[in-house]
Length: 97
Length: 239
Image (cartoon, rainbow over all chains, first blue to last red):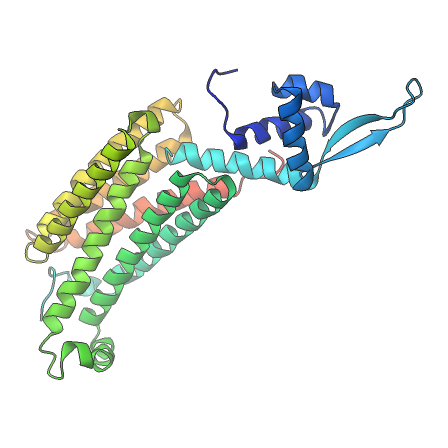
């Protein structure tokens, strides 16, 4: 991973990409490691992404634990965001922006 | 009647079709760049969009003035509509043409300069204050050049050639930095064709058929940019 500080948009892209790379569903702890973000920062971003309907949180009942475990799902809108971001990056690269 | 330079008569009208195609391409690129700006809120996209809107406006002025020059029905309608401005005996017609040509040249040079500045990587740029003062100086010079070019059109195409040359070098660097990516090559090639077209325009005073080659190269250059734009736009959602 490069040392360059990531922009807000790049962070959102990295979060969504991590979910997509895991087949569209990921556990919050895995996402924290994959996206290389602190717990607090990740939660802030997740709230924003839920608000924008790019992801949704699903609660799955667990046999071992009393509390259901949470998983994060990528929505169709989230997949659309990833595609648009890739297109925009390609445009940026092509036109040297 | 005032005319910027004499174009081959058989080609009159075809060039306007070429310009109309270029205008649409410029607007398409501007629209996508604006969309990217709304998506990312990064200013560079807004500037790039503005540059291509300015290109489109420049061609719009060209289509209008050349259309009026080429076709007498259009000229008559324009003369009637602009009677309050140009005078009943068209005594101010010369001023009207000069203003329109000035707008066309000024807008085109501003657009090229904007593309050159935006295409520079941020690390290559100077500090913001320095950048603004530098741009202000350039805009002043372009204003001056566009004014002088009304009397000697070669000045406009020479200046355009210099800025386009700088843009091509910039895009060549971009091509090398992007590991010789095909899209970056196409963008460089597109601007190279536009540059060659501009060089032909410089020498129209020697042989007016060069105007046709200039227009052809310019159109091919913009079509290459359109091809790159379409390739990016067509990218599937699942890739």
